[in-house]
Length: 614
Image 1: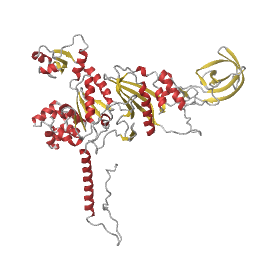
Image 2: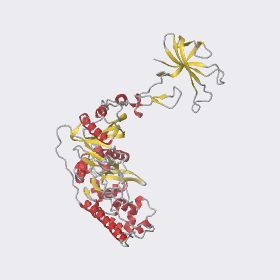
Image 3: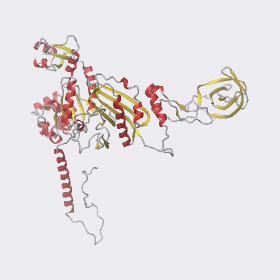
């Protein structure tokens, strides 16, 4: 509970009062009335203060227009840390909030909707300009898709719109109206893939982006507008960047997804609506702005409801009865609640952005990100250390000027926040990034983090917890690949061949496996059978042949009996008696006898060599 949410503690009379002594001062009958009046006054003060904060204009700190000479200093990306304080590059502490808003601040979030009305046609124009038969600008061109009764117009260019051709018309009808029209089939799958790429590229402005329909994007820019000089400057920056890619866009910023969607399509150019003016700005929009289907829009028109204000003026009980069983796209009451923020509608990004991430915006496109990584690593590790975390996986993302996004990921065997170590993980890997025509924005994010506390394990202040071994594994993995590096790990099994496994080193922090004093440091993958020449009734063989050489046992120790694991081994598996022996040349081996004579699980027991001592 924040300080503003706290109300004065009022002394309400208890419902059950115990018998008081004669000298007890009983409550006055007007105490309850005074308490209720004080509570009502406190609520009114909070409401007036909240209204004052909404009406107060927002001030933004505009950074210097000129970039300093050399490598730009990285800045923290907004809305990446889930609550808490983030120290920026100027040493100021900025509170960054993320996650779903509560009921009290439902309208405190800022949502930006980007509508690309000519996305399919503009993609086709970019492809047509590279073809030898490029159509002239004044030639009507339409893109068609298959419909239930033949091809249907999906998109048109400006010349076709001037001729009266519109999307949704049948191709046979538009040919009668405009015989010179050129008909091409639309690439729906290609448009979807291109829109997904554009959604990732739009994360240069904020981390929470998602595809909105077939021709739009939606972004949760809460806390990101100050990085671009305010919401108006941010929308202008978005429109300029998209125009350089060849896409025309309509943008709007509001407190809810539904309101931003409506304003981007029916509200004008780069509309920025504060929470206090949301109701007034949405009221004159047509009912199509509520994101309802055509049939529901027709029903509302027949009822005389043509604008959002008309729908809002109807009693809620009437709309609830009429559309109680309708879906979300056929329920104007539910859509109205989404627009006004009564029903939550968060931006569902395909993947969660990293909680810790820094970015470096460059004054002009470059081809090599190497000079900018040291400062990014230092700034990222500084933020991780301030919160007590370490990075297990970090990702470098470069945003190209042609709308493409390239990423490069490195993983660590254990949590780390050493800038030099993280930087070395990208050695000889940055060449894999395709710079294209250059990139002007670089981000470094910790996509996987773990708690990391500094613990002193030595008297001289140093830490001896396997960090050097983990760094060695990280460097080898970065150079040779994750599948090529494995580390031993102990398992819960008393069978020698199952007591140790070799998983990939990055799955867990590598630890030094301390061998048992009476076990060899290394075992054979498959025990090798030996041929006994002279056997001893109780003990190891006196002489045996192994690998075509005769070995005479001079000393031995044992036996160590190991029973089979009945919950894993097959029925009939025999027990083992292990011996540590030394031959005439001083070489020591670990041999065992498979089974005991007369155990009823086989014939004469066999002998095997399972390992050797150094």
